[in-house]
Length: 245
Ligand code: PGA
Image 1 (tube, helix red, strand yellow):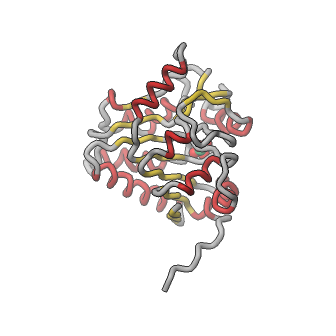
Image 2: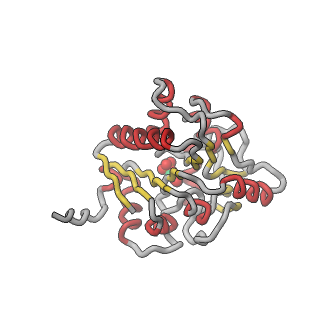
Image 3: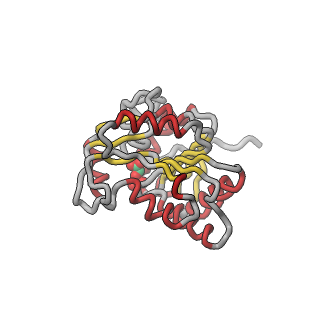
């Protein structure tokens, strides 16, 4: 796993956004899987500004929501779809039909999961946040490495942090997530982590053995995974080995 460490949150957002918009331009029809949560927000802000300035475009992209909460009202502000629409999708030039959401209200969830899995195919780039327990998407500790898109129960820790997305009005207990295998199939993966609340989990990520008990650690075996972090999140990482002379 390559580590790109930026000193401030502003540097982080500028750098990740510049690389992201370059990726958008580099492929004729980039297939993206996009995380929600708080971490990507400054990145999405920069992307919106770049599109408005005519410096980037989602015109030819295909975007998949990484995960979605279940059992909460469809219009609730903390639903992943709503968060991503507000932060990015409704403000850029992505054609509406190419934003793929996950309908957790459907009667036949297994069919929804199968359809999502088939539509995702091979992603070009997946953006992930990391939970303080090492989850990626809603793949909680213990998620099988060969798991596909499926319904999952959320850990107590994840439920506690998720309730903030809903202004404390709802506490989701389950969701549907792209699976570990779905994510690991992506040609490229960017793991995003900022702020001191992520320092301890990044230390665990880089120092503990690769194990499904720490889902993000599986990313260390991916050939093209980059961790983008700021100094606050990187504070407990072991020092980088010296560069060869
Ligand atoms: P956050 O969530 O970006 O809001 O910290 C990350 C996650 O739980 O995946």
